[in-house]
Length: 86
Image 1: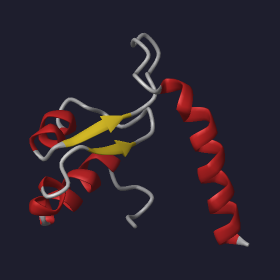
Image 2: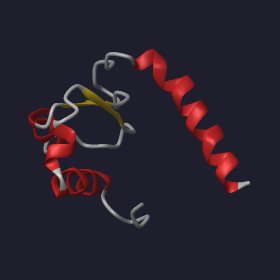
Image 3: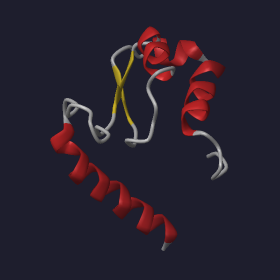
Image 4: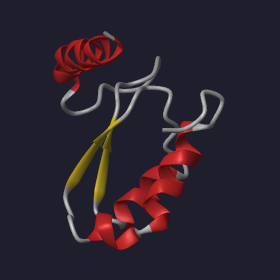
């Protein structure tokens, strides 16, 4: 958990930087993020740890592989979040 005004990309990199061997030990992991996650800094760093970043395309970008899974995945996440709130 991070504060609401934290920059997602920085939190992500910081979390994985704390123990990079955790990510490296599980090479091939897939990290699903929202479309606002910027990739300029994080994608090469994640790739060096064997983590693949998957996010919806922003306007003007080509669709990402697996894009058809985002809508059902988002519905599942929203359902789980609603259950936690309840």
